[in-house]
Length: 235
Image (tube, rainbow, N blue to C red; front, side, top):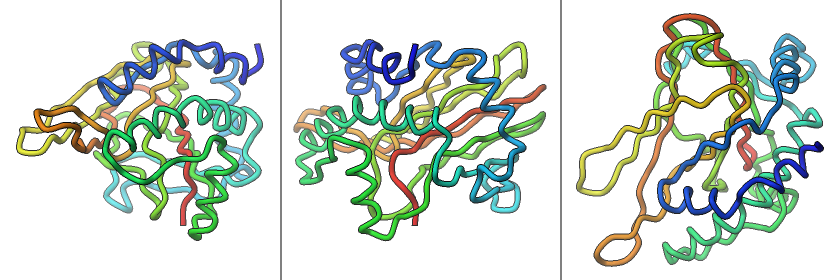
């Protein structure tokens, strides 16, 4: 099945309900095993990437990631376009609930044009790898003034088989409350959708912003790879 059809046929009503209620969701088996293997095999093809980041050098954690350059590999471009189409209405509903004037374009191309008009010209999809002892500190993927409030990551290795540990961690920071940690264990081929920076939560006086960060727990054994698709471009 083609990527676009596969994405279009996901249960987007249920996905939207999860995003509205929790700010994240795990969608199982979006990528096939062969697609995961193909993405992993491309890791050493330096011609695909614009930048390599060794995380220890920047106190980001321990591991390595590479940003793809334009034009993106076909599967990544298709995923980025198709998933964005489904997420834009969710994102616009969030902005409306928070009484923010921001509205996001219906298509990825229009969003990227908006990014480029704000000097955010560099692609942000990336592939990440960790070995034993690796981790990713809690952070937000903000690359400029323009950012889309939801992003995605695709798991390329099987937990419990290819690696141990390496949980996907979300940190929810509500005003005047203790922070809450959410620990997810997505499987190979799964897509995690999650809040980039903040989301609306209903309180006694209407909706308010709740900030979220994400990171990766320590890999205790093996090799963990994933691919992140962020929809806004970077300065």
